[in-house]
Image (cartoon, rainbow, N blue to C red):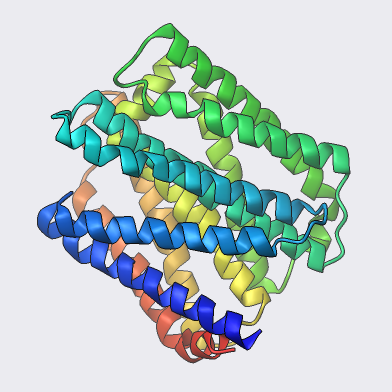
Length: 339
């Protein structure tokens, strides 16, 4: 066990080193030799991690394990696009529809596949720890519909370059499937909502994560209408707001709730609470500004008064919240990682 712990720590820090390398290299040279090297290393380390987890997952039928395996397969699938980008560039197709389709393939299956399914795996693990039992048939259909919907909704990501009825049709089927999955998810958790709650801050974060997840599925369902679908991929404010809804709303708030529930973070710390308030306020304000400005653009109403200033001020709350959380939790993270 100690040997495996050392192995995982080394793999973790090597992966983090590749992330830092990408963070430095990409702004300087774009998709150049150094950034490609670091991104390739990150992908290889991800494969090593996935292989380790696949070998360790027990052969037990639990929802958490099903979602965990699916998340890892989506992560692996998303990286196919990364390996395709260098040949696309070499063949002179940089900036082409194929190039952007590859990028969208990676982002779509990262956000809607790897991240979302990994978050759901942790959620069902949390539910299992609290002895919550879900109906097997409903759970199985929720999983299947969400997987199918994830594949089909990639069509919207390429609709800007191929705005043909077939592409919109595939996306429409995908969003209807995801809406059915959303209804099943509510049916699954609603009877157990009291058992799934935690302390005050844990409950708030879980509610925000749940609301963001449901909003994500409902918004995607709205793009079944072609006019809404066109706005969804052409108005950048909607695109950014939607990405934040997944990463900041559903994923970040759930992970913070998970950390509070497992005592990795402590809500009795004033600086931790200040970080949570700052992060929540920044998320709500930036989402409101982004979607409102996107709606103004859609209605040809121009810019909101002080749009950039307001967005900048609201965005400052996000790194401020992260600073407070890291400052208040550094020792707890250190202890947790060194176990």
